[in-house]
Length: 123
Image 1 (cartoon, one colour):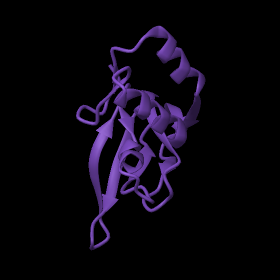
Image 2 (tube, one colour):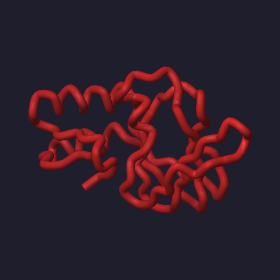
Image 3 (cartoon, rainbow, N blue to C red):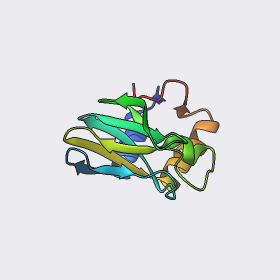
Image 4 (cartoon, one colour):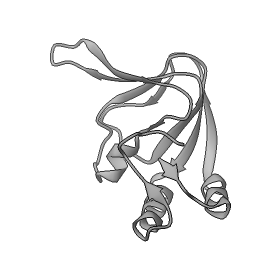
């Protein structure tokens, strides 16, 4: 997600992030909740899922180390998360507040910081 950034820029991102730990089967965020941050999995495994129209849980993807999630709702200025994120095992994530992420994106549009949704991972 962030590529070709200087150590100073990386330090700025690190200073504005926090670490949170989730136990196995703990909800990280629920579909329909207001998106307030993006997440970077540091360790563990995260399931992104949705419920089908007939009530079945459908796994969209499984994420591991260095995978970013929750960012699309913020990038697209949605008012709610479109899926659920659950820790499948003990999981540690870095959190970046939505406002800080948007500030990083402004820097990116100036050509300093490169933000991409294509890979959804941190290089």
